[in-house]
Length: 472
Image (tube, rainbow, N blue to C red; front, side, top):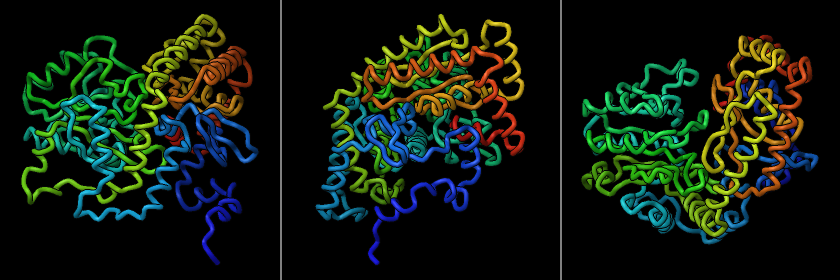
C-alpha cells in the first residue's frame, strides 16, 4: 500500500496526547492537561488556530515568535513547492549553494552595513552557541557576560550564559567563565565586569523574552561604549526581537546600536523549516575561518539546506511587502494603550510594557481587601499561579492563546503575529477585561480554578512541571 500521509492524519487526528504520553514526553502532557492547554488543533491560518470542530483560536503566542508573518503563509508554501519541483542539489556540503548565497545577500541588505558576513544554522540556541565561539576566536578571551533574567537557549553554552536555576537544575557544572550576569540598567556593575579586559562578549536581548523587560535608561548605549572601551564584543540576541517583532526590523535599532554580532532564527523559518543565522562583521568572521584548513572549523550539516533558505527568502520578502514591521509598531502601540486603560478598572494590573508586538502585562497585589487576601494565599503556594489562572481562562473561555512570561513571574506575555489588526486587538482587550472582572468575584470561579491548580500540583507532587510548560 502506498504511503498516504493525509490518510494517516485523517485517521489518527485526536490521538495527539496519547501518542506523546506513550512515546515522547508524558510530563509535558500532564502539565498541559493541568493548565487546560490540551487542545487538539486541526489546522492553522494567519493569526488563528482551528480545532477539530473548526472553532477558531486567536494565536497570541505565535510559536514563541516563529509566526511573525502568520501561519501557513501561501507565499512560503509556494517557495517550498518551487524548490521541490526544481530537484536542486541539496547539502552537497563541499560546494557553495545558490540559495544560501541569496539569503545571505538578502539579510545583509536589511542589516546595518557593518554586519556583512552570515553563517547559517538551524535554531536560535545554535546561533548563540556559534556567536560565542566567534567572539572567543575574535578576541582570544574566554568569558561572556549577560543580563540578569536573560534567556538565550537551552544547550550547554547558551544555558550557562543565562544561568536560570529552573532550567539549569541537574545539568551542571556549567561553562566556566559564563556566570557573570549584571542587572538591567546597572552600568556600574557592567563596568566592573568588563574592566578586567578578559570578557569576549556582552550578550543582550533588547527586550527580554522572560518578563518582557527592556531598558528604561540609556544603559544599552552606555554598555556599547563600555564594550568598545574594553575590547569586548556586543552580541544582540535578535532571535525573538528581530524581523519586525518590536516595531523595527531589529530590536537594537530602537537605541541606534551597532552590535558586533546578531543572532536570528524563529521567523526566518517562515514557520516551516528551522532556520537560524549569525550575522557579524567580516573581520570577526574571518578570525574563526582564519586559514584554508579551518574553512569548516565551525559547521552544521543542515544549516544551508535549500528548503530553509527558500523559506528565509520568502519570509523576508513578506515582512517587507506586507509592511509587517510598520504594522507591528502601530498595532503594538494600540494594544498597549488599550490594555493600559484597563488599569483604572482592574487594580490587578501593575504595568503594560514592551515594544511593538512583544508585550508583557504585569500583575500585582490588588487594593481590595478580599482580593488582597486571595492574592496572598495563592502566592504563598506558588508565585506563578495568578498569571496562570489568567492565561488558562483566556484560552478556555475566550479561545486566545497566551503564556506566562517566566518562572515565578506575575506577567502575561503576548506575541501576536505581526499581521493582526484592530479586530484582534479588541478581541484580546475585551477578553482580558472579562477575565479580570471574574477575578474580582471572591470567592468565585477564577479562584476555584486556582485551587484546582494547587490540588493537581500536590496530587502529582511535581508542581514545577506545570510551570515550566508555559513559562519557558
